[in-house]
Length: 251
Image (cartoon, rainbow, N blue to C red; front, side, top):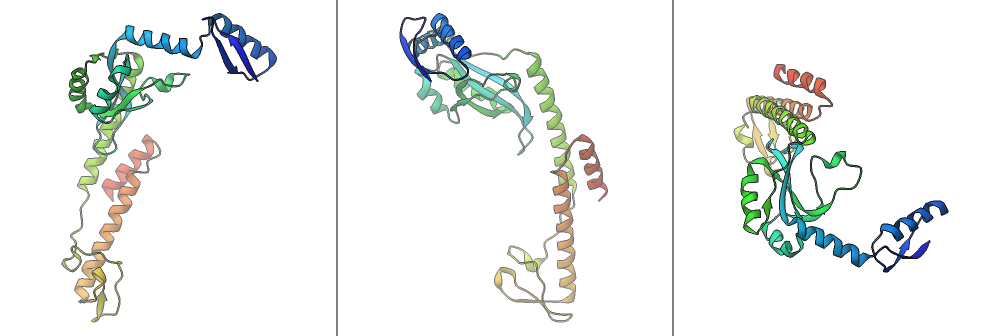
């Protein structure tokens, strides 16, 4: 049901309320004593933003980059950002969206909307320089419990990522048979002993029995590598991960 309510600022606002009669009455009382109309609320927010200034923030995230194992940070602008909208967009990568920080997963309310993006730890220094170049004040994030906790989580995950990377790099890579180099192939061998054929890139090529054996060994090694990599990326928990890592080493 929609109500026309005189807010505490003296202006009327048309608001739709839900819930029981008691709950709607409670909300009406609140709006009349403390609520602001849309325009007054915008004005209040802008005044608070101007008072806060134009700030650049950063926070460690509790996870890492799957691409290279880098520790990730959420960076965002707060305060009086409106006059700097175009400047922020010119820095690249920033979007007006709910911020992503280490603390937000512990909040009951939705994260605030702001100009933000996720970067790697080694990119922070350059990002600070760019932020300061458009007039932002660099705010050092307080070392609160959540941030310290998330940083330790990120370090732990980075260590695991590096261990997996080392295992993957230690896996023996099969040598591609000369007859298959640079080709696409359906991995099928036709014929019988003394008359085998394959079709790399769609072209018919006759191969010897020894070449057939070399290709089959290559396919077997390639299949084993795929199994190892699949096992490494499907770990359910730490105990399962240790089991998989040990299995891959002994494979």
